Image (cartoon, rainbow, N blue to C red; front, side, top):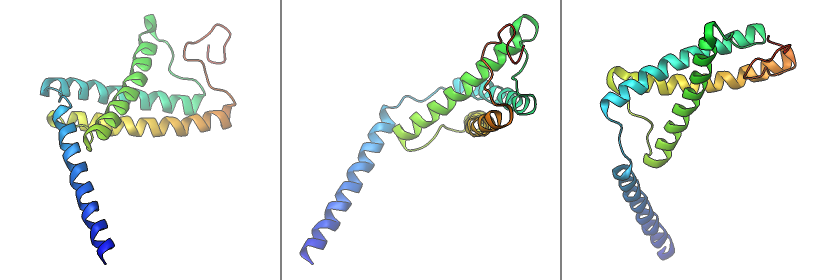
Amino acid sequence: PLLGTHTLAKSIHLADSSSTLLKQANAETPQLAESDQAVLGAFGTVGALITFYSEFTLKTTGCGLPAGPLGLVGLAEGLSYLGVVGIGGYSLFTKIKTGSGLPAGPAGLLGAAEGLSFLAIVAGLIVLVFQITDFGYIPNAVPMEGGMCS
């Protein structure tokens, strides 16, 4: 009985200590300004939608989006993939550091970007499996002369 009481008291103390550490981490983690949340949320949401369209195109054709005029479509596609991974990584970092994900932000834009980014990452992994099984190759990030997607 004495050992059980000691163990319970020690567990309560550890729980209290971890709660204190979490509060300290929250205080030390800089918060994004509301305007930054809006900008990151808007670009992140648009980027995730472009990524979904790219993944759909990849699944149906075996190739990503075409470069487009002056390479602008390819640029938007590449930046969208980077943005999705960046927001997903930032969200995981924030979750580990503070115990909660990103704030919803103005009009819920940052929360939407966060959720869509995670969905796009999962969808991308699924499309990757289908790409390999259906087409037998992964297209280059930069189209090559004479390549599969040129």
